Image (cartoon, rainbow, N blue to C red; front, side, top):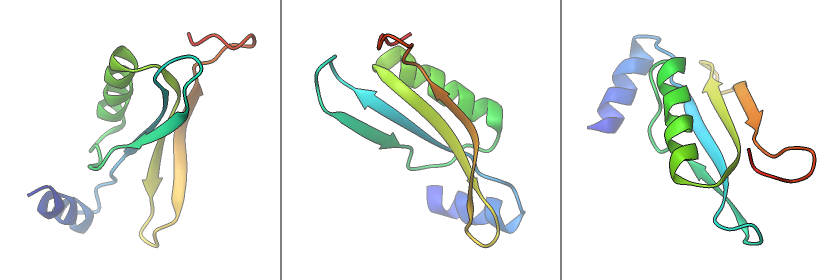
Length: 89
């Protein structure tokens, strides 16, 4: 169902916003990337996805990408949540 929706949105020329989060479970644990498997249909929804992730995980950084018709990626939002002394804000 999700891939059908994605195909339909792409046919209608609707941009999908793809959210990725850089997560660390604890202060000294290994980092991992959580890339969302389904795109958001608007920037507001993508920002809400980031906020939900920050409420549930220790998110060090988050970004939102879009892809053009040729498959070229553009980052439309990027934020680092680690301050100058290494604390996650």
